[in-house]
Figure 1: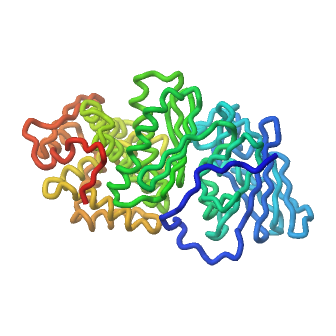
Figure 2: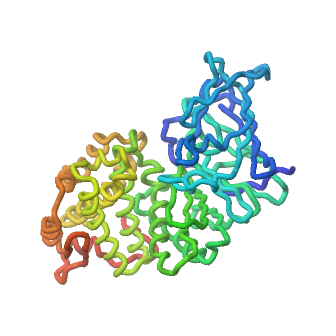
Length: 486
């Protein structure tokens, strides 16, 4: 074995979500990872003090009722004197030492055969997979962590063959990688293997990625989006959450993605079809934007309460800013705006008498209402604010970003939005929550110079022949270099 080449060092410019880090004399934990043959990896972990509880994420499936935990083998726990400590699995991805004994070290094996099951809900982009000669993991499927640890650094080292590379989002200190806290370790994606990463640096912004050879023909479009959108999003919010992003792209029967603190993964429907680019391009933009909204600075104290915002507003801004950057044409943009209303109308049918906040408690069952309803709030709010001030919606989003030093409750989110819209945000949200018909939606947008038409699940949107301020803001001509307006 030889030391690993490390790719994707990170410099963090945003305050961690759990607050300012306390003074730590040493890392709260260290993890050493090395391959163990036959799709296995050995992990040796040591902790600054005895720890009683360790967890992975828990995504159960029919054939894997204990989810990611079923891939942990030969777990041993030790005290500070290197004596064995009993540890038992307590269900739902958790292990505990009995009688509050605590463990000062763990040793275990991760069996990297996660592709044997179909991960429903969160897909393998949020768990683990293998492609070409690379093993991909999300940290919360690999590292046993105590999420109650304080906000202190965690060290990770990889002891890999000389021709392997670890591609990670964590910053480096020599040959050691540093996660800022337990969430940073668990809620990021990384990979180990022989696939060489791509990399580009754009105006102090670093992008590192790995692409599965099965979908390599999509690389030019992927790189174009990755070279364009982070700068556009940074200009829109007048802020960047981090200076580096790490991304992973691999083949799957369907397109979807997962976003993490400073990394994201995208699975592309294979075999690739030219038409499918319309779908995965938007998904890629959506996942990148999550680094600002959802996985980044703007996120919920209780995430389910604010999914309508973190998913719906992300989806709306993705289509707006992709059009602004010239990455999609006018016809596709109008089709995507129509899809906002179509999703909302379907959400009313699939999730009757469910509010946008309540919908978040069962995200996958209420998908259309969360994404469609949330995006409709954003669409209508921007149009209405633009009547008097075309940049007002963007200024509201910047204020929400700047006030995101701590997770948002639903009450605080609406308070910040109202304070920057003269109370209009709450009025628009309430109007959407009432459950609008196609007739009322058509009439509302018509007054703003935006034409909508539809019947049942058929919807169309376009700018009117007499396009005033609101309409002009929504259908502004693209700026290929992004929105430089302050």
